[in-house]
Length: 319
Ligand SMILES: [Zn+2]
Ligand SMILES: [Zn+2]
Image 1 (cartoon, rainbow, N blue to C red):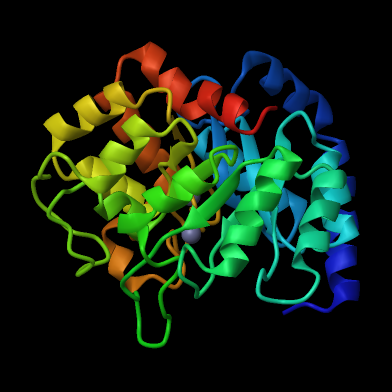
Image 2: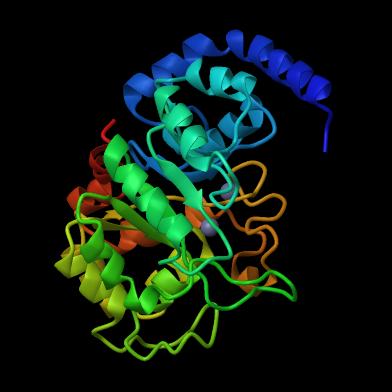
């Protein structure tokens, strides 16, 4: 971990070096896609993009995979990090997270929204999804008029990782209890539950999907639930059964948002795409953003693709 002073220097250096690139970046924004040899997806907003150590590395990933815009997920960001993001406000927006089990969580989340955070996320905690701490965050999100992104996971990826926001199979109770909260579901248990036969027994189930899964039903029945297509979990679920995926994406075309959750360095698969997740080895050497964008493009009509990768997130994040 770099010291705070080094972090600051890195940031200032990145900002200085980026200043000379500003005209090119502006032009690319007008065209609606990143400047690079990246694939021509059209406008794409990556709604699951974890804050990287400096501004240049955030933009390098986006430009490398052809992502024009991003919602950066930042856990307790420093003032400098927020300023750096906001200097590129036409490409970068952000959502905030903090430890909801620690004192002052509501105040920190409220302050983040005051400073410009568009939502809460990602919320990834070793708690039941209906724990009091989560319920307070759901209520606060509704009060502040921002969405809340939750990581649901019932099976650890490695010894000691633990599990997160458990109990997705009965999450309908929360959707009913907090009708004014905009929930964005994400991760293993959210996506494994597209399959009616999922029994909380594998991180990434494989094979054909039994229709009528919990996720499919809740997306259809609840206007306050959306799905985040990011990570190996989203890519895996949409790769298991091509007929199911085409039909699912068409039926829920207004309820899903693209995200990558990719940790590769350059938007081309260099480095580790799914950090701390050996179970996601199917994406080794690949960029999750590129893989999932290609998967969505070949599984949908172009008008639906545009909704999934750009338009829907504008509605969910109200920006
Ligand atoms: Zn996650
Ligand atoms: Zn990547």
